Image (cartoon, rainbow, N blue to C red; front, side):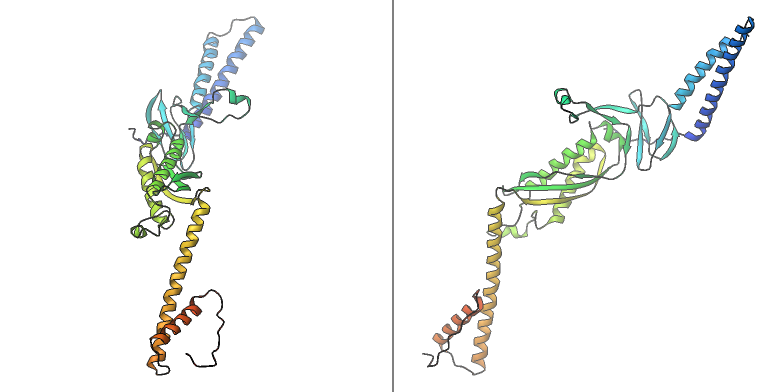
Length: 333
């Protein structure tokens, strides 16, 4: 695997001054030699002996000036320049500023293995042009907003899930040399890690499985699932010199084909839980009412009257509609 090497290069401002001076000298030599040749032609005299060498030297100096001009590099903050000399990795410039380096350093790395989307109708009938990878690498934090994908959770239920990943390049050598296209690599590995994370967790707790109530689920434990996804991405993206800053789930839902059935199931579970709470409260209130009436000596209840009293109170407390009392003007029996 490749390892990044930091190199230092010359400041571009001093070389720029020398380069401007070279262009001035080149123009002066060229104009002087041409003027000598024109003067010799007009006077029918022989030109000085140094005229031809001076004219040739001006072209050589022009070539050197253009060559020096191609070595200037401007690096913005949050950017790095990978230096390649005839296919060999020399090092990486990480400091921002205006520099001058070897003019023969490569400007691009070559073509990536991915193909671009055809831009017009005629291009669909031609092979896609390969992406050209620049030797300038952005070190800024990037955001990968993944598309919604359909996967099966741990229990086999089809769900839709999506994630957003914040990442940045830490090792430019690994990013450019150890993978074909590190941006596409991040995208593919993010989808793979998301599918793996979704498959090892259930979407939600199952009511008939008491053990699962303490396990991690996708819906109830977003923080734990996101941390697990980030750890998986750190492991997968390390060979590409990429560090994951954060990974979060942005969408989580049942697939459309089972969403209505799962919604009815969730509604049924909610009704059962609510009814359970109501019954527990009603039983507590009936017990308190009978105890207060008996202990205070207000009413003496036998077993039949207690059963009747408890039944009436349960109907009043657990009924969904308001109870309509019936007054008995005779005896209670």
